[in-house]
Image (cartoon, rainbow, N blue to C red):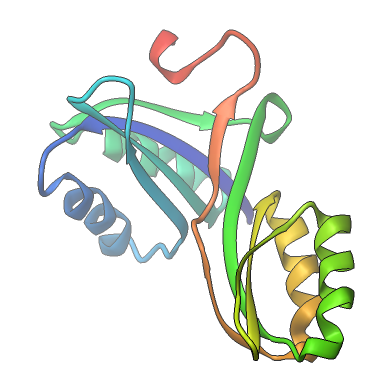
Length: 165
C-alpha cells in the first residue's frame, strides 16, 4: 500500500464535503489528510485528499467519486510531477536561556517564530511533510505544548493544472 494524492474540484456548496468524506468512510478508508479551499472560481472548491491504499482500491474510489453530482474533476497527482507542501504551527516550552538555540534551529529549517511569551514560542514552518516531521523530532525535548498541521496541499508542476485536463 502507498500514499495517494487525489485532487478533486467540486461545487462550492454545503454538504459536498460530507458526501465525499462519507464515500471514503463507507468503504472503510481512513483519510490521512484532507484540505478543502476555495479556488480562483468562487463557485468551485478544491479538495486535496491523501489516502493510503493499493492502486486497485484507489482506482475504484476515484471511479465512485466521479459519480457524485457535485464533483467536477478528479486527478491523482504524481509526486514526481507535482509540488506539495504543508503548514505547521507548533508551540513549545522555551526558557529564556534556550531562545538562541531555538532561533538557530528555526533559521536552519527556514521556520519563523510568530509568537513569543516568557515560557513558550509559537513557530510556523512550511515544507514537505518529512521536513515538518524532522522539526518535530528536534523540538520534542523542549516539550511540545500543542501543534496544528494543515495537511498536504499540492499542485501540478509546470503548465498542467487540474482544470486544464
